[in-house]
Image (cartoon, one colour):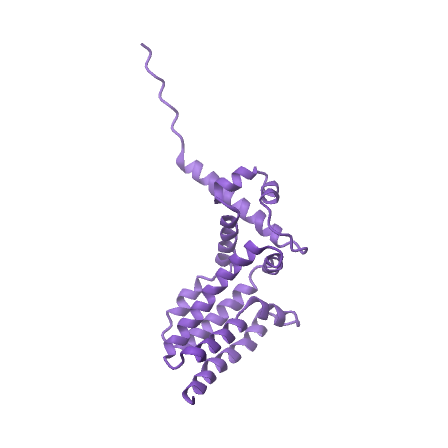
Length: 209
């Protein structure tokens, strides 16, 4: 009997590297489509075509269209240094922590030219809008934690402060202010004292109720 020929070992490292390369290419294709000025809603066929793969490959990589959207958001967040939020939230003094959070979001909103296209696409795409809303709620949660650390506002007073801070640190606010020929630093310089005033002023208002 002729012994079976040993199977050629499959390189897991090469396979993983190829999969990572494909995944990155698909994310870049998705972001490129979302950056387009017409606000085109993201379509898996369009992503596959731009990346030079099949629609099945997109599903194999992300499981669903929403999975692709989440991966695209993660890529934007990484490039925009949202990881700095952990350092900001580790700051013990609430007002100093808030200032770091505001600066982090100013950096983030200005870090990727496709964000405007992503938000424009969300106006036409319910799934994308829901995914963005879920991401935004994380920001609201962080702001709520900072208000809680003050220990002086609760109920409607807390809700008012959080809502105002949430609005001021949003992409819509940043984008509106930046359109008036302000750079990132100028926008941040406008937002920081406003956020601090709300954070401090509403606390004083709560004490007077």
